[in-house]
Image: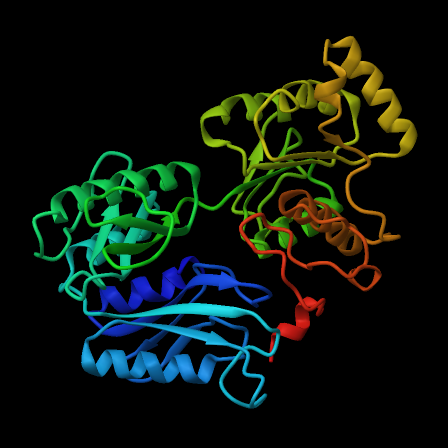
Length: 394
């Protein structure tokens, strides 16, 4: 629900009932990942998407029915060989979609989750999507230090089960993971779904990953724009106040006037393995002290702009500063993929493409050049029809 969280918070704050359909399982080639959601208000307004178009109509009707009945439902959608025009996914994948009605004030866990998301606080929302009837739809909102809500009254094993769900959800929150959790009624992990098991879907809501762009140049404005488009919280930093202005970088969440290495030192508690650094200054007095620190931090990506010659000279200076070959190997320089880019906008696409490929494990080869899966996430089964990404938007 992360992509429609703002709209859901608005509906919830206004006291509007709605139903939210969430992708909770994916098999094969499917258009959206677990966590993608479509929500429908009591007045019929819809936001979000679960399939890029393939099954939206059917899911919309399920949401309308859930608003009326107040009952949650788990539905599976897949390709129909018998009738290609039946409700299904023409890409050949399978989506499991959980539809849950939401009435503001009626569920402590959901109320707390929306409030925490609104405040920007990390929270994991665990919902029972399959199991004993009185538990389906039950939710827990789990934070690093506590929880909100409780499982429905049921067998005596609910207490241990609730504690186990909370503990597992907290671990998933710490890792920023979203996915399914299968437990026995005694709270012990299970290998398979079946009688006497409970399946939970845990969604981790953590602050947006950060993109730190160093160097207030024209290329930085385009990189900031595409970074925001990809969902990063973007900071542009430069030591020159005449260039580092909000007017020049309207798409950045913040513009900072400071020496790059000094600003990075001040952010050590706010960066993690999802953070990306784009060093666009290509000036040794800024680059070297910044990269000396950055390449020793557990960040997700470090790229630096510059010519081949600049890159060689920069590597020499970094070696003199004591960086090892292993640390230097983390540096993506010259930054970006070879797209033949020339304009700032084209260069930004090149940089963004490399960041996505590095994060997702892409080969950077044309999809038409291969026969294997087009999705590289480890969580996805290696089943695919080789279709291009846009082909999923039926």
